[in-house]
Amino acid sequence: MSVVPGFKYDLFISYAHQNDRPWRWVTEFIKTLKDELESKSRDFTIWWDPALRTGENFDLAIADAISESAVFLSVLSLA
Image (cartoon, rainbow, N blue to C red; front, top):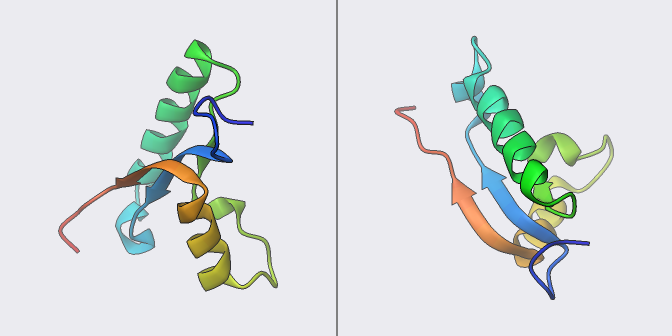
């Protein structure tokens, strides 16, 4: 259940995995953002790709998650 009615997720976060290395700054940013938003509402939901499971069709899972999200956040970097 999300905070925004009609959506499965409140926020979809997109980023380049190669830019999360070696310091995992994107992962830390997402965890901090998630903690802060959930402190405002326990129902706040975020989708980002560690939610994918082995054997899952990545393209389909990502497309579904985007269409089921109220907000799309793109984390841009140089690479």
